[in-house]
Length: 118
Image: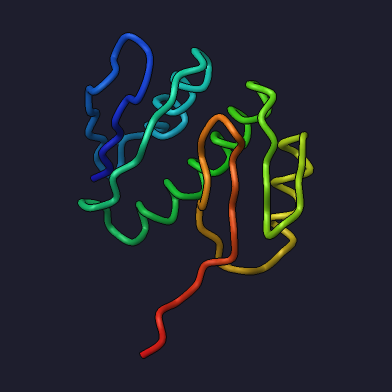
């Protein structure tokens, strides 16, 4: 199960629970936030590994589109992008594990994920 919290708009503070198997749930819910220029945050605490991967990909794509829509820059490992298509192409061709490091009015950033040493 994924939990999505509305950070802006008429539903600010509300949470939505989406369960594995709900067809197009990601695209619909995040798409509605994106369509209305609202912001959201995902809570992965109840997600299966498969859900977490699927939602992470959809979340990065939608957040990049939101950054472009709001004319905010996108960053990936020190490179700056203004078009979401170029940004997403750079991510997909990088072949590295990534994580979101910035998502605010100054832009949307993704970096190579660091793993703790054992």
